[in-house]
Image (cartoon, rainbow, N blue to C red):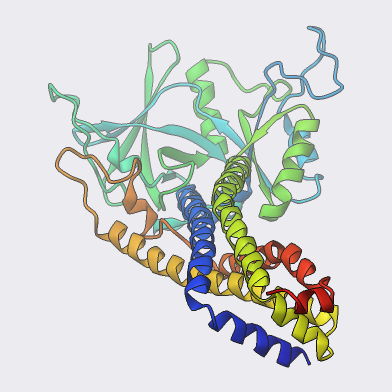
Length: 432
């Protein structure tokens, strides 16, 4: 029975093809607007996430001492004792559920200069336990990740920060630190003395992480250098780490681990938190732009309702004949709802096809576009970072738009269809 009603609905639509095309055209415009606006936010979000860094950085949480921001429920008076990053704290961080590794870090407390022949350079000097290197979440582009003897590990971009001190103008010089003989000069805090160290680069890290301009040394060596720089021996009782890197077991556990660390009274943050904020921003943008596209679908819904109302007025006698030969109110309602749904479905299909076509056109144009000589881009961002994917239409978005367009057609045709189904046979038959 349903197949017969569906066939009748299709036949009725084909009797007024021009009206069908114009009504479905409104749904097409609305569907295309919804898909493209949402797809634009997906493309921008994908590009933003791709530029954040390595996947390992998303599970990295950097823990710092609390500089006066008290945890919730803690006393905020000046006599309140702030937690510190001591050895006991590091041990307690291991006990937080979802923690894969805890890497304490010691920073050099003075200035360190790298000497490569006539050139000079520098970076942030960090000391960690060599046994914890596998948990640091980095990979090497040259060499092996190890720290033995005079070995150090350098960031992937550190070789680009050298300069010639004899030159009258500053000009960055790029060196291959893995093959260049290097020395390190460490100054005392008061500048009265310095210590030269022979160093060997064990590995150059792949770029795209927080260590791009850092030098990583064994922790004990940095502690020794700090004793030289400050002129004071290490006091075990008062020793504190500058920061602690906590590695979560997965991206999903980062938020819980960060909250637990903050509850302990420390400052905690990382790229994972930034990514959450980024996703929240794009989620809001998606709702706003999707709503803008939804306005076009709302206008199309009025068009469907108007078309169905006119169809019912033109076919009132026909409705009476259907009821006279045994059609029920439900049958009449089904026929007209099917017609309204098919209008929405046809417009939705056309909108999806058009959206994919425009996606390919926009992305192809973006791939081929070049900045002009003045450096002005087609978009206010570096289009080369988008990889030719400014508009991204995932299959689930296309399916959602198709269901939405069909639902809009059905909902818009519901009132006219109910009106048609409630007509009495006698009144419908005598209508001219």
